[in-house]
Image (cartoon, rainbow, N blue to C red; front, side, top):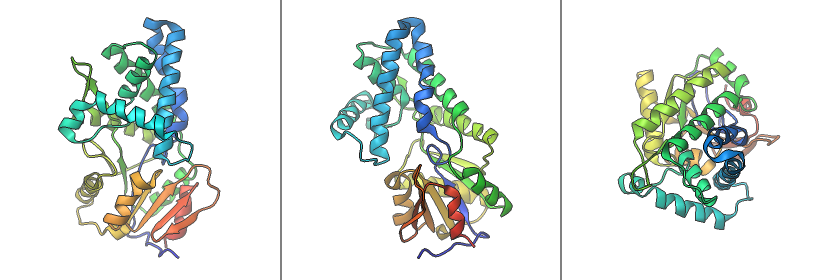
Length: 291
């Protein structure tokens, strides 16, 4: 049995992509923006080949992230090796790759099709992709219902979300990372959530420290404490995410969050997985654990 939290003290932390909005399902649709940009120089047939390869690469990465059991680890490892090579300056400066950089995935996809894209085309194509994601993504099951309840109880909401890793190519054909450059794109994308009926006090973005690094979550707590004007008891925080290892394990095991909620699209019933940990296909079911 999971102990219930008090509405009067609850603080809500949300991952965004595939927790609040359906990003992955719309990735394939949004990738048509890549085709529309590339076909101006490479024609429709080659552009579709690159787009299809981009989607295959992204799906392989996503299957591992969400631990669906369908992932091809050999293919995944090959992709990660190539990402590491292309992001050597990033690893050298920051100690880790930015796995979800769509710019990098697009470059690899084009190379797989024996095409070397100009940097400007990569940036324009990925701009079109993210713009389409923002337009087409809809709230996940139960999200609007839960947000209405949060509003009734006048509780704070913080988005604590990964970087979109907007990287840039240097003269050696390798990617470099400017955290401020990347962060501004994600902040702009987060503002579009407001037209979908969502709201938040502040947003914390994984630039440069990203999940599951402890500093990523500490940054979110610090932003919330500054906003609220007092030190937070982490037992009052409820954290929502779509990956236990990425979004929830560190808050639960190292920071003592009061409840972590794994959103699993399509799961019909909520399951009490362990102490302070539930999984659900409808985020509004968390209301059962609040009094």
